[in-house]
Image (cartoon, rainbow, N blue to C red; front, side, top):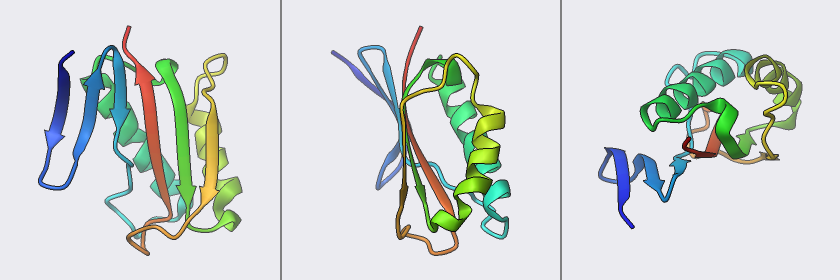
Length: 116
């Protein structure tokens, strides 16, 4: 079966599609001057864009892994997530406190989704 990759870089691809499943690389904010609310909004915007490019959307998310730099930001991240996620289509999710590769990043989101 073919593997299709989008936004292929030297180190990683932003998206891989195989057998009707879309795998997104960890998405982070480009504007790291924002607080957790701003960074989460930006990250989920990246997720929306990449899923759309792959022919999917947030109602088809199979799993979400969220990494946050500090659990003190958990309520702020959840406030944005709760506005963004589609009720009735809430995916399985894990949220973990982690030291992120870029200390200015407060949140990173990894998504696996289905194509229609």
